[in-house]
Every structure is written in C-alpha cells, then in structure tokens.
Length: 288
Image (tube, rainbow, N blue to C red; front, top):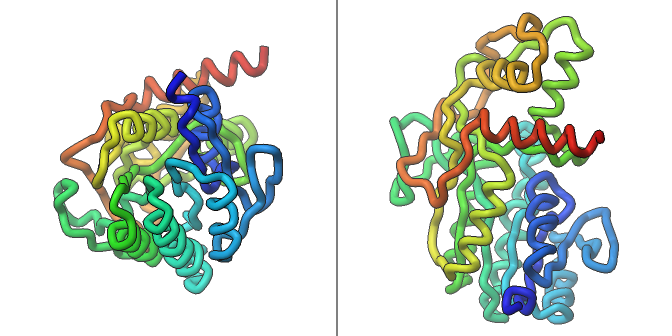
C-alpha cells in the first residue's frame, strides 16, 4: 500500500522506454507523465524547453520522484541539428535538475553508454567519459547538470535498448521481423559490438533504485555480446524466419562507439535469447 502513495513524474512517457516504464509503474506508483503530443488525465502535453511549464507542473503535482527519460536519441539528428540536441538533451535536463534540487525531488536520469568512446576494453562507473558524438556529449552535459543541482539523484547509463513497445520511433526487433517478411535482402552491420538491453530490465532497475533509495551512478547492460548482424540472425532464429535474407557488412557508421563493455551491472539483465522469447510470447498473446 505504501508504494501507491509514492507520486512519480516521468518525462517522455509515450516514448520507447518511457512507455514501458509508465506501463509498469502504473501498477505500483501514483505515476504521471509528460509528452510532446499526448494529453490525457495522467500524461500532460509539455514542452521541456519551457522551464515555466515544467515548474508549474511540478508545483501542481508535487511528485516525490522525477524520472527523466525524454531525450533526442537519434545520433544522426543530433549531429545535424546540434541546437535542438543541446536544448533537449542538456538545457531541459539542467532546468529539470535545478527544479528538482529546489523542490527536494529525487531525480533519476536516463543517460547512455554513448558517453564513452568505446576504445577501451571495458568501463566501470569510475571510468572517465569520452564521447565521440554530439548525442553522447549532450547526455554527458546532462549528467553533470544533475550532479551539480540535485543531491538525491541516480544516473543510469543503459546500453542499446530493445523491446516490444511500438511507438513512432525505430524498433530494431519488430522492424527486422517486418523486413525479413517483406524484403529480398537485409544488410546489417557486422563490425560494431552491442550489448542489447530489454526495456523491461531498465524498468526493473528504476524500480530497484526507488525501492532501495539508491543514489549515484549505475551501469546497465545486457549480457549478450553481438553485432547487429548477429542480432538479426538471432531474431530470425527465435521467430522462425528465414536467415538467408540477412547479410552482414561493415557499414562504416560514423561517430558510433565500437564497443562499450561495462565491468559493473546494476541488475542481472536477461540475455538476448531470453528477451526475444519474452517478446515473441507477448506478441503471440496480443494476437490471440
């Protein structure tokens, strides 16, 4: 019953990760969300670049915890429109951090493994960040703002995410399934190493942070080490689809870390096969 009394505000509540957190937290917390587009009883339409709007909402809701999941995560778009990336990923985070500090709200900030270059064998929470793209730079600036203005904070650095939530954003698993069914050939990168992390596990980690009153920095990674080509093959195997259409190639994507391996992990996450089977069962149940 006590959990029901904890009021939580989640930014980016209709995003890929935010949708899952909002869904899970609705069962255990008095949760509200923000969105650029959605406006319902529980989710408020809000421009995070407007500090006065944020302040009014915090004064109205008076949450105990704010989870900041909203961000511009498209790496290429961040490079092309640096002003937008700066405003959304840094300035909005800074304003939210200032208000959380002022109102005594615990702030949980979703950052990224892209704060690292990927040139070292592995990284701990004590490793010095060294981003190689503007997305990583702005998220790191956001981290520094949280540390500067908030006393009671937690920063989570997740690796690449996947899940069954389908928003207007890209979803690698569902998109790959669709392409295998409809296209003659799929070209996937076979160079850069990823550690796919199920969004369900991120949601569990955020809950653990709240329940244990954790403060500080947490790394969060899936245990499976794969290229996107390996990942595509595994998707085809789990969903009983043709492997022959999937081709591997070094796509020479610029400004992406080669491999960010974490030495420490805040929770034990599902491996890729376990996560994909979870998605498979969920999709099957939704279609029945």
